[in-house]
Length: 95
Image (cartoon, rainbow, N blue to C red; front, side, top):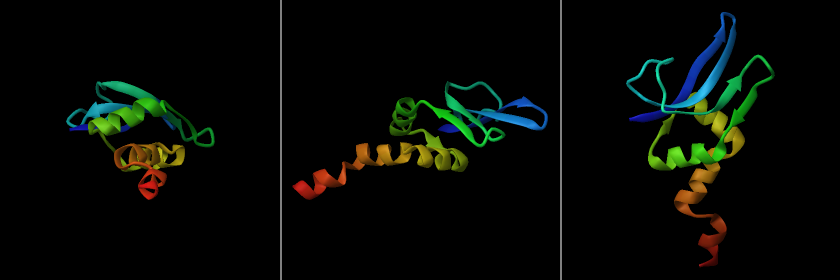
């Protein structure tokens, strides 16, 4: 199974995380398929995400970890996935 999760970077006591697409059997900091962005908790939650690629991977079946899912919710990634999968509410009510 393909997962979207955080991989730790940075120095001791200065964590920095990449948001990566990885096979679930790989180690936390092992080889990954693609990097989707980063998360720096020390700089007031500095986050950068390639939203389009994240949506594509989720639609292909990649499962985000709980932490990544929360980050994606803040950026509206999960909402976009839901709209693409199930259609927008406006389209459903127009019919």
